[in-house]
Length: 309
Image (cartoon, rainbow, N blue to C red):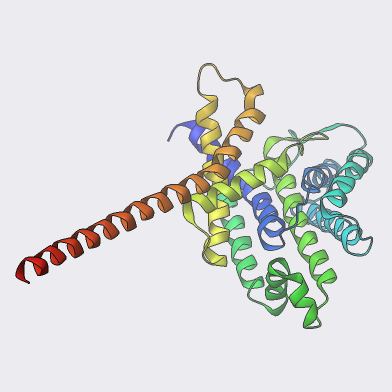
């Protein structure tokens, strides 16, 4: 395989955890969470600081996950307890995290090139599939528990769940917290693979996550939780392959990455509607043909009866 293709698969696996986090808020909870752009950097920053100070890489990665959980929990508390609009609470937390991340990192950029990471001596294509599959299966199991089912039901119809006496506020906080924990975990791994953590590396992560979710659902479907989470993982890989192919076009530059991402998301959003429209149009034509055929048969039978009479 060409090196660019392997690189695209590596990035797809690294960002798959972030896409799973976005899936939880975007699809399961139906919550527009923009905290992602900040919590991704939070995970990268925590891991980079701890590793650069001699901490064990796996411990640093776990701490990054905890940092993401805390960031998500704060967003959930602002929304549920503070009664702040969901979109606005995510924006406020994203803005706050920029300063918090600077405090954590101490400077805008931390290098990990000479540090030992979880990928030291191990290929990303060896370790990441194991991690991604394990987390995907754990999520599948969680969504089948009572709390997981409550989380899914809250996203479908929170008012109905409240009528059964369930505390939807706590459910939302748990869901948003878990989502940002996965996002921060992805950020920690991306930082270790790339060899640095930067204060601006989280910008646009929500769009990339949405692109992965939408592309995965459009191509692979989402009829069950198992299939939906698998589609998100595969969607993240497909997205990275599409971007890699697009960047190999001569008149496109690396600086066009955000534009390419936006175009991919637009196409992924429009494609299901176009496919549905074409299917409905085809069905309408088929029904019209059937009606015309029946009318023709009725006309023939009527003429035949008239002649016989």
